[in-house]
Image (cartoon, rainbow, N blue to C red; front, side, top):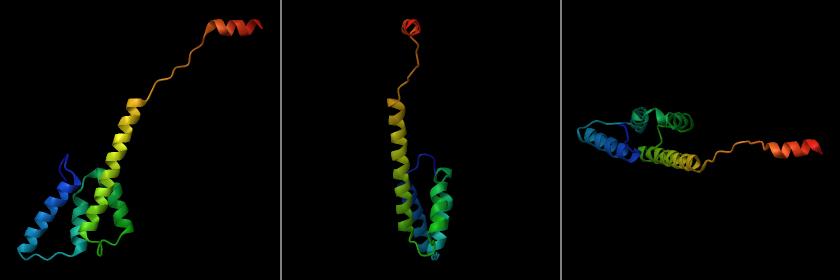
Length: 109
């Protein structure tokens, strides 16, 4: 996976390569394709890669379904980044202050 490359770009490039290799007579099992794809994504994707590897059977999952799950994760990452940006923008700063005149009048009571 290249820097700043979307999962859709990865899917297009990966599918293009696999189709050309199949055209040359190579035969791939679904699990082999899925494992190669999961290994090609960068470290940002590792939580999702681990979750997919543990919970799903890569031998029966189609690579289209695998890419669907990766796109879903990509949308979640994008949404969370946008929410963080909004939170940082709207975050205010509160300071505690003491007003000496009020404290003195309370002490005199």
